[in-house]
Amino acid sequence: MKKKALGATALLGASALALTACSGAAGSGGGSGTIDYWLWDANQLPAYQQCAEDFNASQDDVQVKVTQTGWDDYWSKLTNGMASGTAPDVFTDHLSKYPDFVKTDQLLSLDDLDADTSIYNEGLADLWVGQDGKRYGLPKDWDTVALFYNTAMTDEAGITAEQMASLEWNPEDGGTYEDVIAHLTVDENGVRGDEPGFDKDNVAVYGLGLNGSGEGMGQTEWSFLTATLGWTHTDKNPWGTHYNYDQPEFQDTMAWWASLIEKGYVPPLETTVGASVSDNFGAGKAAINVHGSWMIGQYTGYDGIEVGIAPTPVGPSGERASMFNGLADSIWAGTDNPEGSLAWVEYLASTDCQDVVADHAVVFPAITSSSERAAEAFAAKGVDVSAFTVHVEEGTTFLFPIAENAAKVVGIMKPASDAVLAGTAPVSSFDQANEQVNALFQ
Image 1: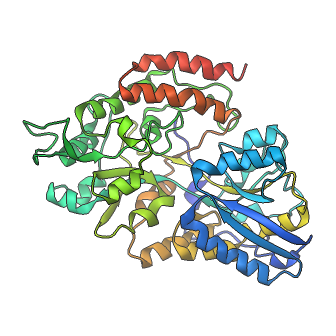
Image 2: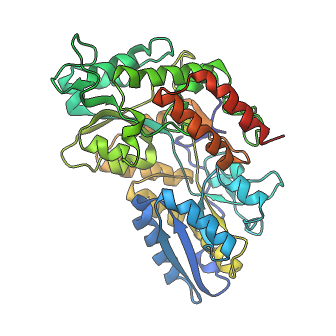
Image 3: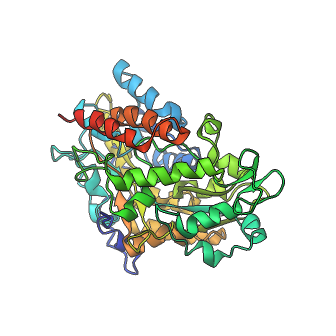
């Protein structure tokens, strides 16, 4: 069942909400010494470094040091730091991670901050309130997914931008979405995937790139498809306690997706290990990649690649869909400077900082006016971001699953999903995986 992103339609509305509290309280101060702040996205590092410099200039005793670590190492270093007592004071947090941090008492409540959460896209702040009723994060941004495509390849194939923007999908034959993927696939002899004589074992350009199996969440891999079938990851969101990987809507989608690999339209899973799906696109090895709005700068920055961006395909529901995710900044419970950390988190969540992020045109900030400012910054760079914002405007978003045991769920679903995509297990094997996942909540 699709649902609106908790008032997401208000995000890019004509009237911005009043910006009252949390409006750049850099002078509120508190504590002394250095605040260690971690984030994982290198594309956002310059913006947050600027925020830190601006904050530091306003403080007498507190100074922020920013450290960026790639996603693959970020969480292991963070959890190891929590165990050893060396974690950063403040860090960028994810909806899939914070429930377990709360359960293990690793986060400091932000309830002492008198923040006006109405300045954010409606509902974003609510996502960071735990089951205990306490707040553990203030929103920093939001994201949706879309189709990045190589316009030189679509032009050569005779596929127009209008066609890319109006694709349709179903799990039986893939609809026009599969038609386009097949036609954009080209083998080493120049034969397209939908033409006689296509050699699926010697492909030069895949119609659709592969980022991995989705690990049970499928944010950029398949969730935008399953949602158009009315499927949801859990029985409720947030704080679901029962997963639905045994349902036919999910398994039918995964069977269709795996069939693209068998047909030669998508690279085999084993070839993607250790590879960057975005860099493969930049190297001309894939015509289409489904990815998140946080990757706009990456895809539009490849030399010699003209990029188009199309919204996700319309499914059997008659609508398109996208997972709606939002990050926040949290404070480690072991910080020796809670007052300084609170001041920094308050500044990160303010218009002063989020406008800086907006001007860098890398993500959509959580504050309504800052998000509008980001859209203008993207447009100034010649980038049309409507494929991402259309989900918000039309209310076709659904929330990232917020539940405990996320790491354990991934630990079960990654090998199960990998096996299905590799062709070594049938989609019915998800029944057993689903039993293992739900046993975590018993």
